[in-house]
Image (cartoon, rainbow, N blue to C red; front, side, top):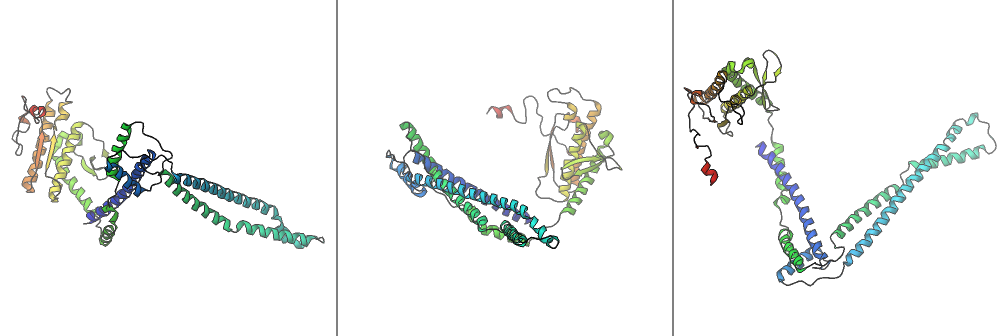
Length: 417
């Protein structure tokens, strides 16, 4: 329930975003089609979008050669004049703002030069005064206070000019947007072929972009709000403890497989499994230490793969998970011993034969544990080219077919067909 609602909210958000994006793309494509038709003189250059769509559809449905419009857009000239005027106004306002800022900087410098008047006022009892001393000091003090007030006060010019600039810039964007929809000049088709090719392209694009169908995602806000309200009423269970317990179960099962493999692991026979949940990989820990070994050799890697996937599927069976198919496909576990397919060994060592045999015994053990102890079902499909002696007398291994003498998993006759 938690996952379903969480996914639903996220999915609806993505649908809403895609819908908005597609709506913008839809609008841009329609504008581009109409602009090109105006440039070729198929419709009046001053026609708005809805009228332009209808005019173009009429041209295409009449199946006659359209009469071309040969005059430029009157609206374009008007908009260009507005664009020029707005640019001039914005430049002048920015210049006024800059000059007013410079004026305040000058006042700040003047304030610094008049600051000694404070010192004089503080030391007036210690100064020998002349007849005009009080008059001069009083005048300077008044000027100092006035300058200080002008610098700190936020005058209407500070806010009004900024608002005016923002308003005219918004109008300038709108004018330029309208200009982008209009042709800059009327051009002619180079030939009838070019004209009919364009009309064909125009017909195809009008079928795609001529009318905008309402999208379900546009009206999904009530549904999204309902899902959000349901989500807020749920209590999310912290699965950290159950996850840690599952990892311990998995490591315990794998430990039994490692013990069963025994000496084929050579130096790692006594090591313990350590499952790194963040990286989703199986590691080996040295006994009585916290040291994680960097396991080498492809033979050990093959066994670790068997340990991990057999252990994982056994743990899944124990937990009775319903969403994982109960089968594994294993392709040629003997490859580490036979070498590269381009240069395989003709004969393998006895010690390697023992390891291959042990790998089949491990898989046989796994199936036996699932079937006999857990009363479950599981199937291993193994592709190999080892001799039958490798699995001789094992309880759960059954040879399905031998791919030799032209018989193959995918017969040549299938490929030829």
